[in-house]
Amino acid sequence: MKSFDIKTKIVFGEHALDRLTQLGRTRVFIVADPFVVTGGLIRQITDRLNVAGADYTVFDDVIPDPPVEKVIAGVSALVAYRPELMIAVGGGSAIDLAKAVRKFATQMDTKLSLRFIAIPTTSGTGSEVTSFAVISDPENDRKYPLCADDMLPEEAILDEELVKSVPATITADTGMDVMTHAIEAYVSVNNNEFSGALAEKSVEICGQFLLRSYASCEDSHARRKMHIASCLAGLAFNSASLGLTHGMAHQLGAKFHIPHGRANAILLPTIIQYNSNINKGSRSRKEYDPCVRKYCNVARILGVSNLNEITTVHALVAYLRFMNSEMGIPANIRDLGSVSAADYFAEINDMAKAALADACTATNPRTPTFDDVVELYKKIW
Ligand SMILES: NC(=O)c1ccc[n+]([C@@H]2O[C@H](COP(=O)([O-])OP(=O)(O)OC[C@H]3O[C@@H](n4cnc5c(N)ncnc54)[C@H](O)[C@@H]3O)[C@@H](O)[C@H]2O)c1
Ligand SMILES: [Zn+2]
Image (cartoon, rainbow, N blue to C red; front, side, top):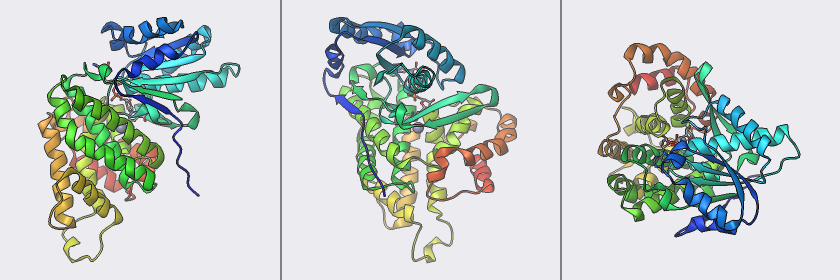
């Protein structure tokens, strides 16, 4: 038996943030990316809470790839304030931190009951509609994708005004995270018709609008579309889960602090080649692995469908590499320039072990061995 649930109410379109004026007199704990506070975006939230007559406090001790230590700080601030509502405003890091804070605070203090509204300021993780939160353990160089239904926000507000300030590099990284979510969910062993429909639409929007969104922060139409694509991909992978690209990317983030979307962008073409299992013997095979048909659908949606399955998968891989290069994303880890060969190769075995244990890897369409993952890490150097 399977089920498909969408618990999160999604408010979107022009003036979506005005939803906050309807909240009434309530007590709000806001978890905000520090950028939201220093850049003044926070007023977009607090001005509307003032109209609603709400009381609020702002917790902005958030850093990218939030570590356990920040969760503990958030829990004690939240328990001291005793809110009725939590609002997270920021990228995936702020939203994930808020999810973990709410989960642990309500477990510790069972009298606390609080609703949760997530307001993303990047178009990438889809965290506003997922039951995942990725928390880092810097002491052990690990990132853990936690997954629990009670981490799902009750509401998500998608307002493109908040993503206009995202610089080009972050637009590129987070946009390729969206593309990776959509494609991994689409070929996941847990995919279903509902997740597939959401993933297809997300791929279509990425194909039409990601490069436009990267090219200009003034292109609000493209930015609005990518904000929706990110949410659609989140809904897709919340149902179908992800795959080896994410399983391996988490380790690159934990060990070398490579931004999440950038690690995915570098890995994705190589993992598609690996999953498709297309090699010199493929031409004589009558049937390909089932994910090949799915990758061909993705290629068709992106407009790079080709002569046959083999050339179409090659075209898809080449197209994703083209998108990366158009947006200045390096083709491999070496070209990032931030990781030495000695450090990288010293960590490969450990990263491969952790990638195999990562929850995302379990739904990859091809089951990798330890040696496969080691080779894949070498390949992307
Ligand atoms: N929960 C999930 O389902 C899920 C899915 C994928 C990834 N993740 C996790 O989410 C995190 C990545 O999130 P992210 O990619 O959104 O990046 P992020 O939240 O780490 O933010 C990246 C940078 O962008 C800045 N920023 C955010 N909004 C901005 C804006 N509007 N204008 C200018 N700068 C802005 C931030 O200050 C930060 O420096 C990682 O830890 C990743 O593992 C979670
Ligand atoms: Zn991701």
